[in-house]
Amino acid sequence: MKFAAIYGIFVGIMMFAQWIFFLASGQVPELQTEPWRIAMHLAAEFVTAAGLIIAGWGLLQSKGWGANAYMVFAGMLIYLVIVSPGYFAQQGQWALVAMFAVLLVLAIVSVAVVVRLLKKPGV
Image 1 (tube, rainbow, N blue to C red):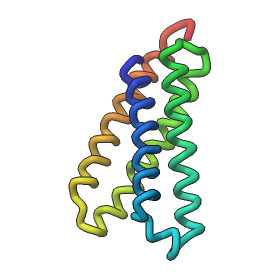
Image 2: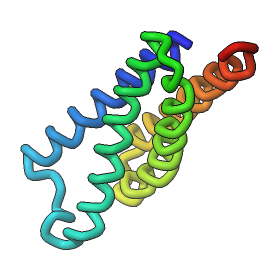
Image 3: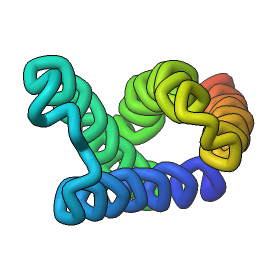
């Protein structure tokens, strides 16, 4: 459970950091070319990031809602790490595609850890 909590918090923080960096450095041309699509994508990313941080904290604090919340936001993360690498693959940025593959594997492992926790009696 601690792995899932720390993973969720870390990934959530890094998602915010990545987007703040990209936005501050003007590396999101879609703001001009596809403003509605990127706005919806950013909303999904920010909701996922905030949810992972909150759910991770809930897991660390053994809050009753922590595991269920983590499952929701880890599911959102899994969707994002499957769909997002296409953008970077199109640009030939294979290191970032590999990073998303690692994030996907770790997200699946974290979900498996939480599923085991949820199967325990009394949780």
